[in-house]
Amino acid sequence: MLNRRTSLRSFTIVAALGLLGGCSKVIAPEQVGPIGVNAVWFHIRFANDSAVVGQDGQKVITDIIAYLNANPGSVATLIGRTDTVGSKDYNAHLSHLRADAVRDALVYAAAIPADRVEVRWTGASSPAVPTNDQVSASANRVVDIAIH
Image 1: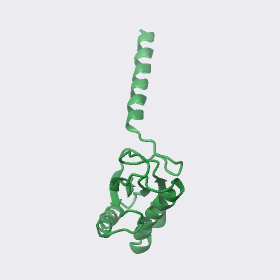
Image 2: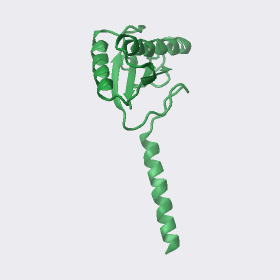
Image 3: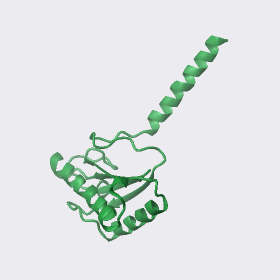
Image 4: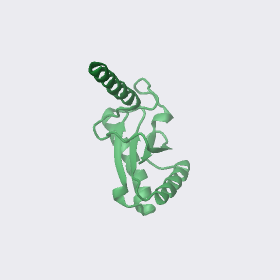
């Protein structure tokens, strides 16, 4: 009976770890770590080769500010991304600039405390829509915002 309980317990643990592993998404490079499953997500799209938050992005920022003000214990993690057009170094820099632009809108323009906003970036290494190199994809020119 004891061996059966041990086997069942081992199976349950392995199954739970397998499910958790299947739900997680690894985001590269190392600037981006795990965020958590209970995050509320927002997305701001950018024009090609731009780090300027457009009119639609400003509307999303307004929604983020309202959410952060209504949930004072929450933190926003901003993850800048790019499509595959351009070099790896250029895209890393551009994704960082995009995340910084959203941070600036939250911290400097909306007075959200800086310790409630984390900035991360991936360049083109973690696309929402996988493409070949040098392919423009608007879905990948984005800052993803996780509020947790």
